[in-house]
Length: 385
Ligand SMILES: NC(=O)c1ccc[n+]([C@@H]2O[C@H](COP(=O)([O-])OP(=O)(O)OC[C@H]3O[C@@H](n4cnc5c(N)ncnc54)[C@H](OP(=O)(O)O)[C@@H]3O)[C@@H](O)[C@H]2O)c1
Ligand SMILES: [Zn+2]
Figure (cartoon, rainbow, N blue to C red):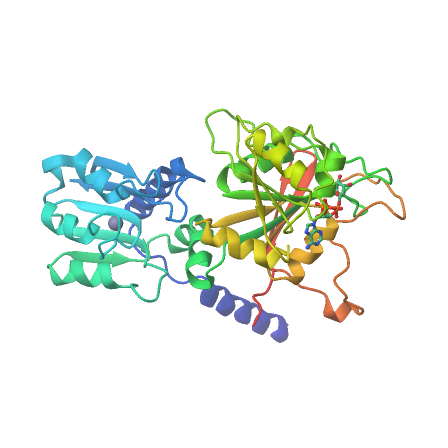
């Protein structure tokens, strides 16, 4: 008995240590959730900028709202200030990310907030860039404005996980997504794979694509599945669809070459099938030669193209290369309670050169959800180095 009560105490202590005290009032937290909701209206469209929403409150009432629609446009706080007009004077402004304090494409929001005469600023999280972190908060405090930092911080970090990763690691966040049967197959022995999961899981994948800047497959997936890789919704964002193919031995007719709905980029090795490249370009498919054509090189290239989040929707061969190259940080495994069997039926991750179970890559921060008849397990690979 003594032991179990000691265990219970330890568990309580651990729980307390794991969840820091909540910052702000329930009203503050509700307003920050509203900021997140507003920010999400620009899902998939802001790269390389973050998703930011802002709410201005005067006497307990919302008098202005705004969000950052895409890079080059004013920041969320500016839209909220414009909506509030004179009512911003003496008001409290909520924003999920620390207001900027430097001249970029737009003047600093900290100055706009001072000029508008707000008296309190409630911030979800400080800027993840260590070079500027805290600068906006310091500027506001120096002007005599009360600043509260860290309201709904975990949710704010989750919202901008790709932006944060990009700033800290100078690479886009790589997300590996696959759908497999309960016996670990992503296709049958013939290579047939439509559909492993049901409608609810597939709808979730469409939402995931809408939130990502690019989605990548390899040549084999184009040859076998002829995928569309769109978000299947007319008013949501479509990611840049990327095909990695060394051989360019690809069909001349493929859904991915229809670029009216979404752009397609084919990445290949220098000098691969110039005639086929010309035919793709005629179909308005962009072709870029990268040597060596590796996942690491591709991530570097996409980072330089200002992308923040990249969804790997490839088969096992390329997925293994991407993991080995450090191009995957997050895994989303959709699991259908089906058994399809087949010794040579493909599995989600090819050879990683790991010989013992003790070498297995163990995911962290693992969660799971049910989606109709299927399940999705989400987790993060441990960061290297
Ligand atoms: N259930 C699912 O979630 C899911 C998702 C995707 C695919 N699939 C299934 O997976 C199977 C295909 O698997 P796969 O592993 O062959 O997938 P893949 O996604 O086609 O990747 C392999 C291809 O990537 C290209 N590639 C370019 N650079 C590479 C590099 N550095 N290293 C390795 N490959 C590189 C090569 O194309 P080239 O040969 O053109 O040079 C290679 O054949 C199909 O049966 C498909 O139905 C299932
Ligand atoms: Zn700003």
